[in-house]
Length: 80
Image (cartoon, rainbow, N blue to C red; front, side, top):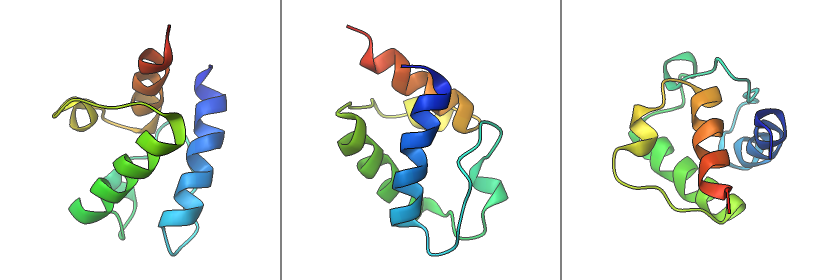
């Protein structure tokens, strides 16, 4: 699955988690969204793990600097 396809599916998660509209684009980071705090981060990771049927190790998600890198991590997890 390509990064653009993953970001489209991440948008569905964002629409269900955030109160305000947040566009899932590659350069987006938590610092860009006022509502995105540590509790929101946990909610997002859980929702994304469920949506993509993947699991992340502790620290993996935090190492991603933006959604593009996070999408790449999801793609890597989805490889057979």
